[in-house]
Length: 351
Image 1: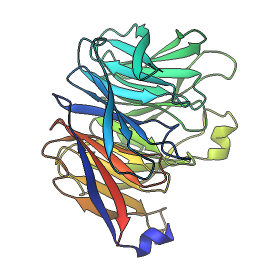
Image 2 (image 1 turned 30 degrees about the horizontal axis):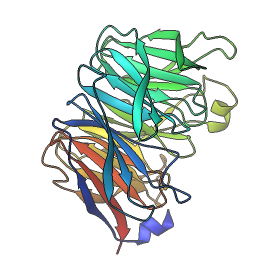
Image 3 (image 1 turned 90 degrees about the horizontal axis):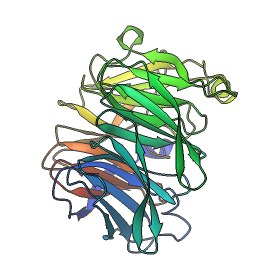
Image 4 (image 1 turned 90 degrees about the vertical axis):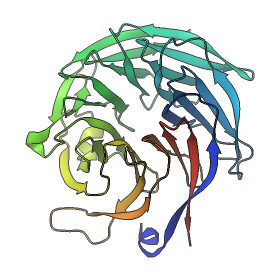
C-alpha cells in the first residue's frame, strides 16, 4: 500500500463499450481470464434482456470486442451476472423470477439450466469459492442456496427467510462457505450452516443498532484476504467491517463482524456499487454519475484503520452508475456500467 500513498493516480477511460439498448445493470469479469496470456473476458447484463460477452483483443490490449450476445432466454431485465470460479459457466439473475446458467459451446453460449422458485424479481446471484453452491436473492425477501450437481442440475438446499424487504445482493465470502446478503431493510445478514447439515441460518445481522447503515444497503465486497468487508448504501456512506479470519475459517460461522469505520461526504446521491481490488483499492459508483477510489491510509487512528480518498472521477458516465468491477487482470482495469446504456473500461495509472 505504501506505493499508493506516494503516487499520484489517474483513472483514464480507455474504451466505451456500446451495444446494449437499455440501462446496464451488472458486470462480471471471468476469473479464468486476464492472466497467463489469456485475454480478459467481461460479461454485462441489461434492461434489454440480454447479456453481452466482451473479450480483450490481446492480453496487453485495452480494446474489447463483443464476442457474443446471450438472448431469447430471459423475458425481463437481467439484473445480475456471475461467472463460476472455473469461468466455465455464467449465471444470470432476472426480473422474470428465474436464474439461468449458461455454458460456452464453441463461440456461442447456450442456456443449460433454468432455476425457478423465487416469487418475483431475482436481484443477484453468487457462486461460492469452490463452485459447489450458488446463492440467489429476490424482491420476495428470500435468499435461496442451491447445490451444484453433475449434469447441470441445481438442487435448492435452503430457503433463507429473515430479511423484511427486497434483498438487493448476495455474496459468498472468498475463503469460507459463509453467505452475506444486503437489503432494502437497511441490514446485512450473515448466513452459515451447521457444518455437516444443510441447516443454514442467520448468525449475525449488521444493522443501524450496531453501527450499520440507516437506509438500503445496495452492495458489499471483500478484500482479497477476506478479513474485511466494505458495504455501500442509500444513506450515502461506505462502511468497512472486519472479522477474526482465523476463527471464521476454522468453520466457526459465529465469528462476529465488527464496524471499523464509516466514510461519508464522498457521494451526494445513492451509492449503488462497491468493489475491493486485489491490490486493496476500493471503488464506488453512484447515482451522482461519479466514481471514487479509496485505500487504507498509513495513518491509523486509535479506533482502527483510516481510509482515504485516492481519486474522484466526476461525470464518469452521463447517468447513474450501477456497477463498478475491478478486473482480476494483471493490468489494473476497472469496468463501470450505467443507466446511460454504456460500459466503460478504465485504467488506473500513476503519473
